[in-house]
Length: 247
Image (cartoon, rainbow, N blue to C red; front, side, top):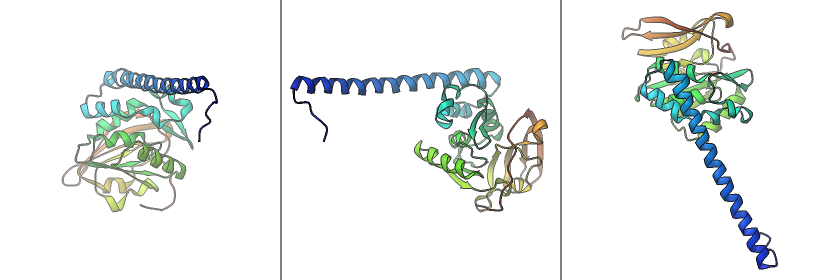
């Protein structure tokens, strides 16, 4: 039971102060949300649309997903700047432009099933979930996997399924996929990721050693033949090889 002051005027004063705090907190929350939304809009305008991303669904997803809720609290003031941020365990959240570019290159459709290799903090999975039917996302680091699972559940991304596993082998039980998107760089493209790509599917992946990586688009035609296109030089964390555990 709450403490009630003996004098009525003291009780009224306590009540007024409490209401004031609630109102002030609510106003601060509203102001913070408005500020984050404004920062997100500037991110989309200045760093994504201005650099050539044109897919309307991708742009809408980048406007919709609250990037600041996917980075450590101490870095939230920098969440909408166009550079990667550390999320712990030697991993990063990619810069917004690269997230948008990779998503656009993958050309996800509302009916598509997507495999993401490298969940990280869950931000790319959240963006993909807004433009595809279902996202299957794999993360090798146990801590990042658990944190992303809690975050995506809390924020309501119900069409994302996560697994803690080495992504080199893909997700055999859920294959084939219309889109495969990889957020860490192997020195060579893992063959299982190509094998698990459906006819007509697209694989977007950074490839190469740290000092000479290239973002590649691999497209598989209806007969199973693949064509690889180099898109742009990039710098991703290396793709970690772990156990043979598979989802």
